[in-house]
Image 1 (cartoon, helix red, strand yellow):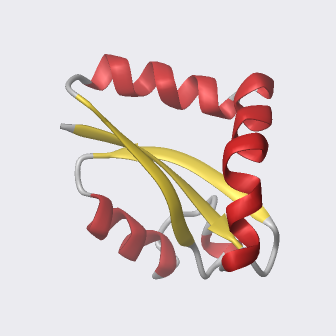
Image 2 (cartoon, one colour):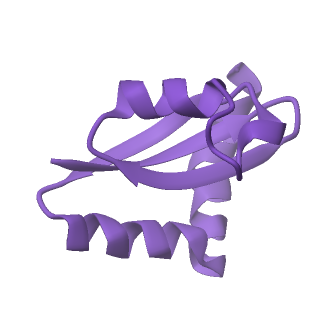
Image 3 (cartoon, one colour):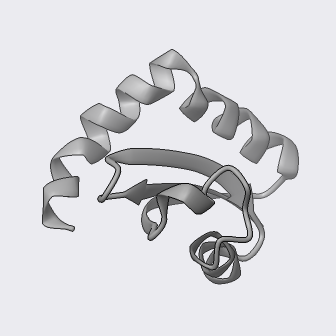
Length: 85
């Protein structure tokens, strides 16, 4: 199983989209500052994830969520929940 996940940094009002086979460990890695592209914006909260049976399917969804249409989808579907964090 491969997971596509969305992280949110409340302090910086910033999203990050990625994929992994271990959600718990990946979030720990991001919050430990071991990921170059996210270490400046920690702490991160996982706000969404989806599971896929193949890496190819997960990668396609990740690419969509990083696109302009995916950013609109994130704002529409996840934006209202962010005030609860």
